[in-house]
Amino acid sequence: MKKNGLRFSLISPATKAFFQEGKTTEGYSFWDFIHGYIYARWPYLYICIGKGDHPIAKKIAPVLRVWARLFPKKDKSTTLPPSITQASGTTADGYHGKVTPLDQARQLVMINEPIAIDDLEQIIPYVRARAIIQENPDKIVVIDCPCRSAMSEPCLPLDVCLIIGEPFASFVIEHHPDRSRWITQEDAIRILEDEDARGHVHHAFFKDAMFGRFYAICNCCSCCCGAMKAHHNGTPMLASSGYVAKVDKEICINCNTCSDYCQFNAITYSTGMGHVDESLCMGCGICVDKCPEGAITLLRDPSKGIPLEIYKLIGKAEKIHSS
Image (cartoon, rainbow, N blue to C red; front, side):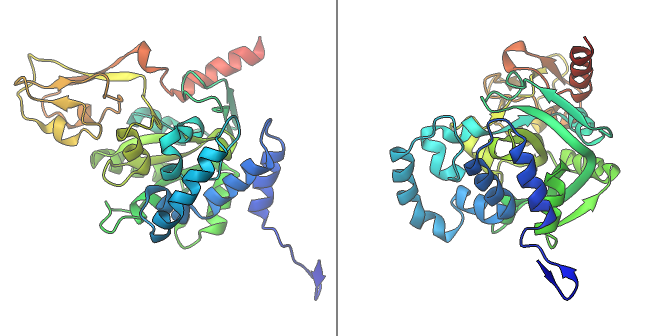
């Protein structure tokens, strides 16, 4: 449509790019697009309702629970927020955070070339974890954390969620200019390191409605993060890094520092020395950095899945494609 020599469009460029990406994603339905659009366009409302922090959440929750029972999710996405779907376990089918120690998180924000890595179900254990496909991976936006923003007394700072690659970064910056900004890879690393120093856990997030792909690194605290709260309440929305923490009993001085920082309540001192409950440990590595004596290390645990080591995965993908 033209007016006074100018072309006007009812659909923004970023939304068009988001829609086009959906059209080329195998198995991505119109309802997936609607879900993804709502999630990315109104994340603060979506997360706030999902966590139960919005006044409307209590009013609509009974209706949506009935809807979820009448129309249970099978292999398709749902637009219901997490707090409504947790009881039936559907959230974990389509939304997962992969715990990434600091070094792995750094790798994810330092990619400079487009990449395509498929078959991620061993890393992110849900059926629609399709791939890491990044166009313009150095396009990074930081946005105010929706989970922290929903709290009356949130952890600070708010601007700690990293949106990585296209079409996600441009979509967020276009629709949330007051809450987001473009940053460099060096800025992203500083945010990761600062959050790590605060004892917050890095998660690489995948979502079915976001094309089943990696799209963000969130820096999470158990007091604010909706995914961590769901995980603690029995909804398996988080995947282990592939490591577990080990305490060297001969070095440990029983200072309790690691236990104070553990976001997963995996370290106790009931026996006089640090004890790691491996069933709770997610291998985030925060305790390793916080131990003043260097008594803790991360060790690979095959039962915990495969680490999200992006450079190794890129090398493996290149080897497969060249053979």
